[in-house]
Structure formats: C-alpha cells, structure tokens
Length: 221
Image 1 (cartoon, helix red, strand yellow):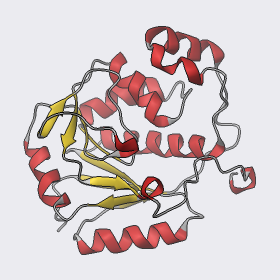
Image 2 (image 1 turned 45 degrees about the vertical axis):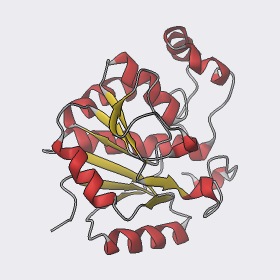
Image 3 (image 1 turned 180 degrees about the vertical axis):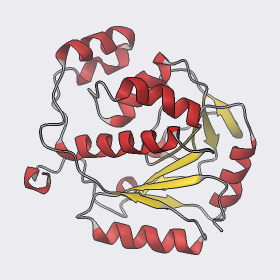
C-alpha cells in the first residue's frame, strides 16, 4: 500500500531517463505508488489561438507579456501531459497529486502531504518552492489569484480537476503554469500554498538542466 493517501502521477519527458531513474528511487524510498505520464502530443495538436489568448489576457493582465511568444515544444508537451493528468484526476475517487520529473522531495514530504489531504478547505494546493515563490505564514496559506506556482507539484480535488479540464481541453494558449493561473481564476477555485515548501525543482537548484526550451522538434510525433 502506498504511503500517500492520494493518487500520484509523474510527468516525464521520455528522453530524460536519468531523471526518471532518480524519481523512481525517491518514490520507492518513500513507498509511494505512482503512474507515469510520458505520452507526447501530435505536432498538430498545439496551435496558437490569438483570439483565445486575447480573451484570457483581457481577464488576467499578468499574461500580457506572453501574448506574442510561441510556446516551445517541450512546454506544449508538458501542457499535454497535465491535460491527461487532469482527465485522470477528475475521474478519481480521491485527491490527486502531480509531480514533474525534476521534483526533489523533502524528508517530511509524506507526513506533510497526508496532513494537507486531511484538510477539506481547498481545491488546489501547491506544496513546492518553484521559482522560489513564497508566502508569509505556516501550513496551508490561501493565496489570491493569480495563484499558481511552477507545476513541479500540486494537489487537486476531482471536482476542481473536472472544472479546469472542461475549459482547458478547448484551448491551451500559454505554458501550463500560466494557463493554470487563468483557469483557477476563471473557475474561482480556492488555492493554497504550503509553507514551508516540501518540494523543490531540480532544474532550478542546479541538479538538472532545464529542458523547457529544447528546440529538438524531432523528439515529437
């Protein structure tokens, strides 16, 4: 039996085999059962929708600087994986946790995550320290929109996953962390961060090299 009281999904970029082996060892040591999501989208799947982009920017000015940026293929791939995760999460019978393959878990990770799950006041919780984004407080701290961090890790309820999936499946216009900012605001979800964080990003602390701007489109179908 898994040590975590939730379903766990691991987002994996298939060519980064060293990351996967590292994650497998971490999760094995924590006795965490998980499902790997490593599917890649068809190249034709992601298309810039300027109308959709404009509408989202009108509602959330913080996306304005991304308007003329074309999303990289690794970023599109990651967004696709999160969409697949949300489809699974909305059909789950319990809370789901997503981990990206550069996540580094703290020693008290399992204890903290299970404690968060016991609380029923939230829709989404970000337990990580992506981009070193922090908030004043201890434990679960509710944050105003825009409320996402990096997507190295987050917990989501089936109902919240269902709401986000219903609109996200129609149009992904930005990297997934920014897209979630819009989606969580659009659905008025209750979003919390956990302090102190129990996950850090290996691609930000120097453990791994970031792959989000990889130009090798031949890696995709």
